[in-house]
Amino acid sequence: MSLTVIVLTKNEERHIARCLASVAPFAGKVLVVDSGSTDRTVEIARAEGAIVLENPWINYATQMNWGIDRVSECTEWILRLDADEVVTPDLATEIATQLPGLGTDVDGVYVSRRMTFLGRPMHWGGIFPVRVLRLFRAGRGRCENRWMDEHILVAGATADFAGEIVDDNRNSLTWWTEKHSAYASREVVDLLNLEYGFMPHETVADLRSGQQAGIKRWLKENVYVRLPGGFRAFSYFIYRYVIRFGFLDGKEGTAFHVLQGFWYRYLVDMKLYEVRTYMNVHDAGVVDAIRDVLGITVDVEETDHS
Image (cartoon, rainbow, N blue to C red; front, side, top):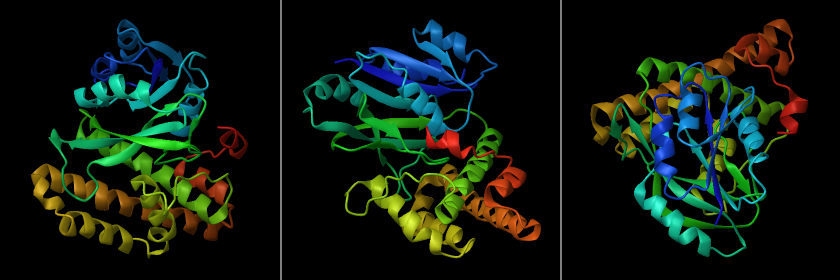
């Protein structure tokens, strides 16, 4: 079995060595796609044996697909991994022992992804662990053409592994909130695209798939988006924190569910409101409003080829 791990980086010197060490037991190659790090990320990655390529950043989907296109022809499987994530030993064992035995009809493998926040693993809130497709056959998987919450798309059958990927970011809360503000702007682009269709729309949404990611995306695109802005953010927080017992994750869990389950969702709604207001006041098109309000230039032609 030939497996290549693809990791996207920018200023990840705090995490990259830990990430690469977790895949060392099974990875044939590691391809790090860097988008202009100014710290020691590239140096550390190369010292750990990774192949490092540099490419300007547009969004996660275009960067991941750029990396997918550059894996060696002998690669059979690809693992998508973020720099602040680690593969647990149990999942590493599953990959090494079970992946080679999968039938040729299997295009992808679902694994569990668990979040750690402020040093504490999150267990409650109804979303942990999340089932994600991170392993896929080379040539049979691509990243969705989206600006936020991107998933890998495969056409064929999928399998399931029980092991986990753990997201354990060690940066400060200030860093986290600034990054999620940028995430909110990117999510607004996707929400507006649902309404105006200025980019091709790819989605894993599938209510009949039985897969968590497909069901959640279908509910988001067909139910959540139809609810009033602001109210839906508050309702989602109540669902996670009260109905699904998010409060049992302690002080760190309260911070996470308030910030990620309410503040972030409310911020998306308010940024969406801001763009729509700009469109009305200035009689502007949606792509121009996104650029002027959010500072995001949507290159429809380039996004279409991602």
